[in-house]
Length: 274
Ligand code: SF4
Image (cartoon, rainbow, N blue to C red; front, side):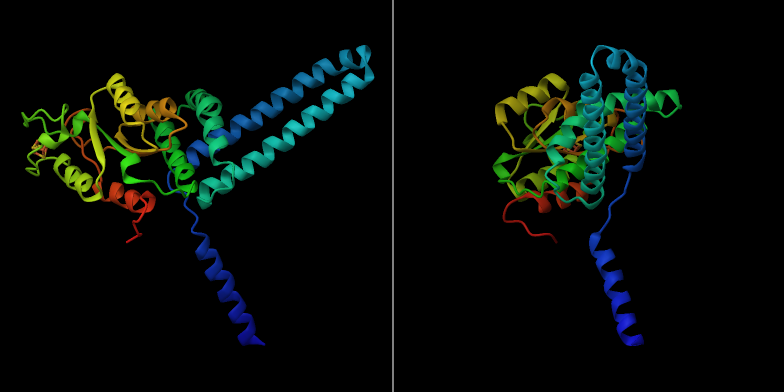
């Protein structure tokens, strides 16, 4: 009996481990998003409470219909929020990923920034958390892409300031001297046969995307540029990688190249996880 009990306990433990819950960096944005949704429910309830006596006076059926509509709206909201959490933490596609990204980018993100401001949380912290949430939605799609349809977009600030080579026109001009991460990234692009560009600004990034028509983008940038980029190119999935700024913003920034390679192994056709 004891052996069976221990066996069952181990089964439960291993199934929990198999769930592989990924919470990294997402809690701030999701907490603010949940608070926003709760506030939305409170405001709509108060609104209904104020106007309901008038509605009852006008028409009893209209009043009951509006109450039913409100209840359905709440059920959808709660159900949707649970699915968003599951998609986000388990990184499994619950058919909601695409809809959730749309809703979170267009509606929830500006509200969370506003809420954050009220309670003294900086924009960049919320943006960073949003990028983690966005990456989870992207991972949840569980899609594989042809390398020809994958684009890597890099910011100009990755290039070392002492380097005089013009890599913005053609990143292959890089001499791969090792002073900055561009050289390693060129090797990566060659290894996986990918297109890679340096975008000096939003206009050039847009032009590159229009010309290449990618199905998947890996973008390296700071919090603000990543969020703007993710918003702008939607519905193209973007995996955002934040650059590191040991010398301050926009100067000799760095990126974790292994993170980009891991993502490539996850999303490219004919590539296996290593
Ligand atoms: S790795 Fe390339 S871009 Fe970076 S400093 Fe060397 S030559 Fe310039």
